[in-house]
Length: 318
Image (cartoon, rainbow, N blue to C red; front, side):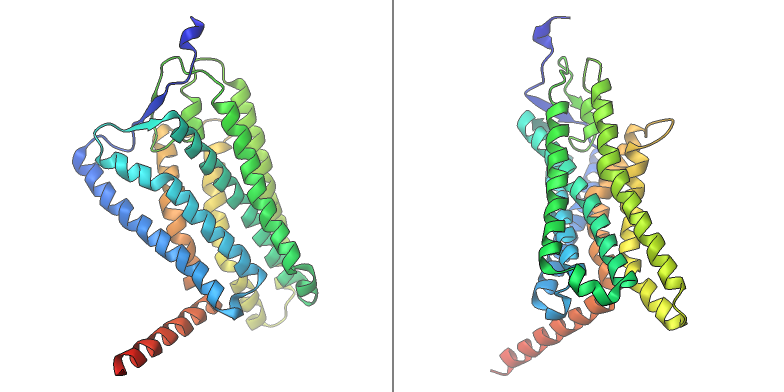
């Protein structure tokens, strides 16, 4: 094989979810509505936390970061996917593909680490409540958040650089909805053992390590809660962790299914559906989970709506 063919294409073709026009139009409408709800819901969560002083706590500081990650992840994937659903030629330039892979990996890694940080925050709140303000002070929380973002970005930079060093030999059709890591690696026309090793190592460092930290945190949390004598106290303690635990189960569960399987890899269709889950469903679900199951957030919503209603009444009487 000539070395002149062992290069990356200047652009790629994303095959997407379906080639049927009616299906694509239906998916366009559905995904557009969900994306708008995602952006609105997460930005409202951020605004609400910013405006209500009662929510100026470490837990909601980390929730703000999680909402920003969700909005950014969805924005990295969904607008391009919406364009391709209505476009005849579903092309994406090389630079755009590399950028999309970098941001999706970086934001995904950031979310995994951030969820582990949030689990630690709940651990301190439940297991060591008297020292909670001392341990989870502003400077420490900021360092934890910065570490989450830097961890995801560093891993993403390494993975993207390794992936786009492997030649494709004129193969430019990506059977996916976006430039996803496994889909791009499949384009290679040479041995990709080193890429698979890098993916495995990355999965252990940024997926399984935070997941194990979450498990350890919640084992300690459950053990402490079970020692609480009153049923009302146990219920309240469990309630403070319920929203985060729901998001953890959804987020880590799908990622482990995709990247760490003992015997086989997921099918291409499964990969596409999982990507849709992360890009569209998870960013929509997160603000709903935290809003519907959290008394503080619901109270803040009611306070904000009351203020807006009062302001509207004053303006109407003028």
